[in-house]
Image (tube, rainbow, N blue to C red; front, side, top):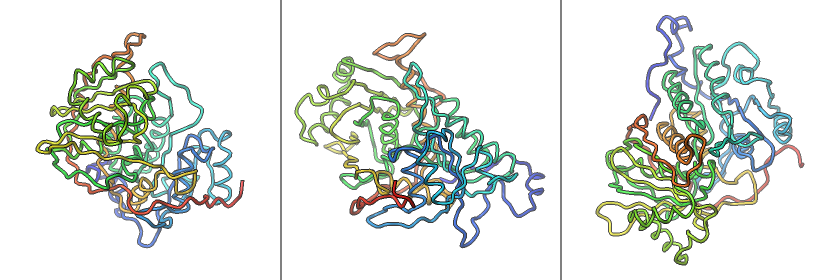
Length: 430
């Protein structure tokens, strides 16, 4: 699960670095020194903003497997794209003595000439950004990421990068971001926090489980919600027999046509019924409760089938048809703690973020993040062609997403008692 070897730097360049540094920033962490983290964010305002959820756990620690884990990294700099709108971030950084720089480059170099941190946390989520016709919000993740990469290239050294949610709205930009992590040999991690959340039952599918088809139900009515569900799907199906084979095609169907498609595809209807029965919901629950019915259909290169339904009342729930088993497997991610506190939501997500900064190893294959990003992008494109919207979206063939890998990771989700609801350690009251 480590990044592939090869940084793009020549042997001569490597030797010019003094002979002590390896290519691509694979310099061992100095013994006893906590990793220094630069945070690059779009917006840091309300306590519900992702920047606040994530960075405050890096400052104050997080709840992992029934106990509080103190912070093991130091946040030493920040860049906030929408600075004037991010009053909360300004106050937190001031109280914690974190300098806020005017550019990404300055945040990574601490105002100097070369890379001066041990890891980068990119939270390009939330803020005042516009949507396009296809419902994609133009968060500037790629724009910020390419500035991070530029510092790596100029410094001839790289460090681990965390990217919240999907890589970008477009496949080309997402693929470029992934490829740069391989070229410059740095670990890349991110995506959704939901696959890491508490599960019911507390199980993980075995590697090489013979999965035939899968369904996920969750709040997937828009791009952001859909990504959470896609990443849940990918976290399960990557463990199928033979490993991940890549994605052959993506299609989106919206409105009443969703239920016509379901009736014509018995595997999807049966798995949807498994979820409905598991929650003891009334017949027709999903058809009647959906806020804008939608299904994202994913065809994999090895013939495995997947579908993501936008539905209410089941949190995020996965159901899979497994060869040789009489009943489908069903796993749910339920019950967010609240109200907002430093232990809200994504503690396990941050745990593996910190682990990456300490070990320089990707918690899971970054190919999964790339495929999840591509599925969401082409789902949004499916309903649009030549400026016109179609409820029955076209099937988008994706031969370029034939990306295969075999996961070796173990379970990564949180377990044990839920965290108490306590306030952030702000350094100020309001």
